[in-house]
Image (tube, rainbow, N blue to C red; front, side, top):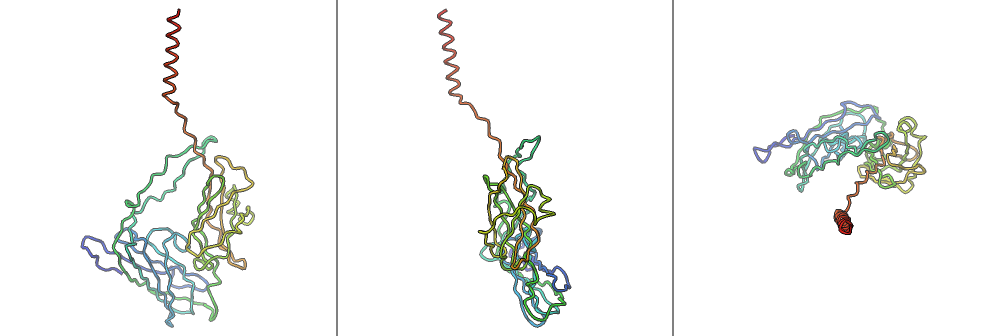
Length: 317
């Protein structure tokens, strides 16, 4: 839906909505998408809600996210997404999306360069540092826009083969973690990721299983046999929250250039696991020390004394 902008020189904010497929058979999950933009620029920092209604009038309200996790592929691209699994019978469902900006929270993204920054590389057994990553000022990368409200229709879709009774969402596993990040901090590895849900991106998982290896293929092909990290003190947060966890890899010897690969699974009791996450890489990188600069004042004094001593010796002879 589009409404006229307040200024004739300002492009209107546009909201569109659609579903991942027009027909689905239980237990296939659906994904709801909403795109909010002004011109070619994505609109960030707003509340986007999907209202899904079946033929009997039963409504489900679903908050959509643009966090790059779960059903959302790319963070901060103006496309808000979420899994829909709360089926109430077979038949046709309609979709509407409400996008709203309040209290000056909406902003336009200038689509920063998302190229991966690598702090250094190995050459002939030595770590060669790259130039520092250039900083991007927030006020240059983003611009605020006025509050607004948009309502968009996403059409309809059909669900079939839904059992008549019961909680149907429990057939879906916890969501796959897709944004696991790892880095060294001293002799410890710090992890961060977006929490999945107990059911895809809804609720809260019961626990996490984190495994580590120096060989990426161990995690890709034999995740269950890789070394297990103790996560007994790690309590999962609600879906969409930021998780942080750190540990000391043992008993491996950690040197400059040592690399570990880490992956994670979310677990719902009893023993229902998510897909293995993306594999994060942590490399222990110790920048070379800057060469010390001699104290010029001390050196000049020493040179002066040496010249003075030479002059005394010459005068004696």
